Amino acid sequence: MIEGAEAIRRLEAAGARLFVGVPDSLMKGFCSALDSAVEHGRHVVTANEGAAVAAAAGHFLATGRPAVVYMQNSGLGNAVNPLSSLTSARVYGIPMVLMIGWRGEPGVSDEPQHEHQGAITRGQLDLLDIPTTLLDADARPPVLEEVYRGAVEAGGPVAILVRKGAFDSPPETDPVEGLRRLDAIEIVVDRLPDDTAFVATTGFTGRELALLRDKRGESWASDLLMVGSMGHASAIALGLALADPGRTVCCLDGDGALVMHMGSLAAIGAEQPANLVHVILNNGVHESVGGQPSALRNVDLPALARSVGYVAAVGVSTAADLTEALTDPLPGPTLIEVKVVAGTVDGLPRPSDFHQRIEDMRAWLSGG
Image 1 (spheres, rainbow, N blue to C red):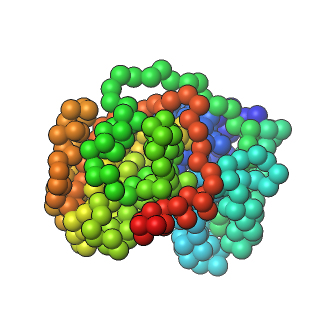
Image 2 (image 1 turned 90 degrees about the vertical axis):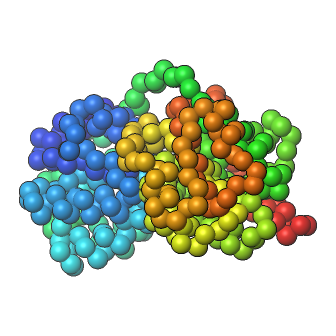
Image 3 (image 1 turned 135 degrees about the horizontal axis):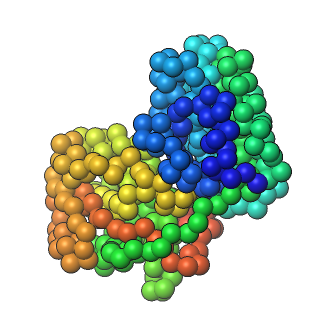
């Protein structure tokens, strides 16, 4: 097992000056150490993995040094475009080191939504002609320096595929006082019409909505729980709202997920679905993968939403203000930014039975 701080020291000793990417749960120790060990301007949490690759390309142009780009393997989909059409040795040949958390590795216990991505990860890297080194719990820090120096020789991206247990875990943080996400979700569910369809973003949000339904003995048929496809909840909600204009559709979104594909805000504003309520549960961090700050921490989301065509947009931070914001009927599309504190409940269950859930929701939407 490698300590995150030691990994950073090794990479810097080899020449790394920029660390950029999207946090991953298998690299919590590494990502946490970046926050404390690397100064502002040399560590950037980007909107998505493709943007991280592009930022690394810009850094190399200016400095001649490969950057370190970190991500979960699910983010390879976002990164394929710049990896194949910009940085590839067949195009501009821009070197960088990709540190990729291998969720769903075959033979390693993981959540079912990671199984398919885990099975194809090595194949994806092979198709992209990216040389790959495995990093596991028995690895020693010098391998990081070797891979970094090899990036320049390769004339393009190289990858470190991080297996479960390769990095240490950061210490737990103490909870803070404030509006909890679970309580905010319950207020939204209680205030919106009973036949509202919910699309809940990946991470703790969907899992907490499922916990709420179970505790209240309610059906899950009205809820789509995003277990992957981070950042696409709002686009799914848009498609659902346009197809079923007589029904209220609520997207329960997160700040880290929203910023990943924020262009969907403009699409919603352009289409003007009057039945769409977009709730951003903003805790300022990528919580489920380690608590690194999100890129939305300094953005005025209500102002941004209004600028792209949302009819109404407000920000709230208390239960009372959230209740008041959920007027009936709401003009739409509406955005409500809810400032919540980081933290979730112990023993939070994970959704499963994905095929059954989608069948139940389709039957519910059709009145069956």
